[in-house]
Image (cartoon, rainbow, N blue to C red; front, side, top):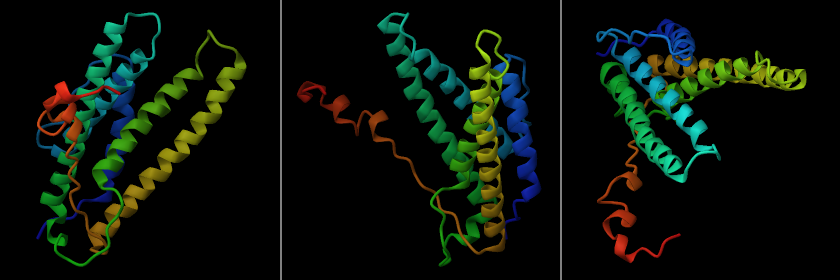
Length: 208
């Protein structure tokens, strides 16, 4: 019988996300979780991936650089998004294999998203909270901008708390055996040369 995933571990992960974001945003060295902490290591990888995506998405909006640089950024974004989806899937696989495999064959309710997808949303929320807070400290803007961002920051923090609680409730329901989780395979077709007709039949493409 698989052991239960303790909700206390979630609090540690929530706190770690905020610490990791602060260090990543300030280009400080950050030690990845120990190999023995497999779940934490995967969530750390997911955050690093989302942070890289954040920076690439920012860069891709620039109008003062050449198109070739924007194209390169867009291709990097495609690669990072594939990596992101792969990590989300790995998180769910780890949880199923280590904690919730026994629930898979039971007739139990499902949730519309998996813990892996919630961890993804939480990692992005941690980035939003940090960078919105950063906006409230800017000296090159007026008070109205800082006040607007402060209001948005409070909304983001509430959304973060709500999502954290929702994940705690999901884990509690899984531990009780009142719901089950299954793996949702991404199967991103556009990144697969054998599945994307723009890649395997480019000569027939008429463009967009």
